[in-house]
Image (cartoon, rainbow, N blue to C red):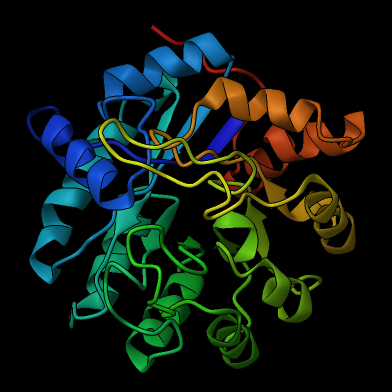
Length: 290
């Protein structure tokens, strides 16, 4: 089984404009157009059984529609293999009701993005949300490290992450981008070995430039193969989740990279799907897709 634990999509009518805008601001190529249909085609071609969608609430008023769409997507998981997490903003004062609504309706987790939400991860507003999500047995997936579109914003640095782990000790806490995009030295120092999951998204492949933009090949280099293997083995392959950040990476390319990274067959199986299936309580068999 293969589970891509970190993907994104947009409503059909917004996808082209949203993806184009993000690609230009990041100067990073998108491999899909951001629609659910494109993601499903990619999954079929790459042999991915499930993809976890991670919506980001950038304004408090967006959470209702985002979570409504998540519930709609999840009602078809058996046919599509798509699983959507819910969204919440640190300024949602009714965060308890939102989290309980998500959990009570079968949503398996929430996505937090400190940079897009302009809030430090150890801010009391996030701490309350994380604590409540833990009480409701939800997975909490957090953008960790810098963001390619906002390279100077350190809202989710290793020190902020460590502060959360010290104060709350969440049990289903997933750090995107191998614990912190472009912060891997600090991740090794402060995060590796702690009680968290790391996903591989947007970390292992070079970033191709978006059309009409230029990117120095040495700019924002990916995680080296040696450091990746060291991090996996120090942290434990049982706490690493396959993720691509699709549409910003190609699912097939990412799988190929992991298959040729030096991981053992047991480590590869754990990372590509076994760990994700256990965390999401999924049956150990492929979904029947329409």
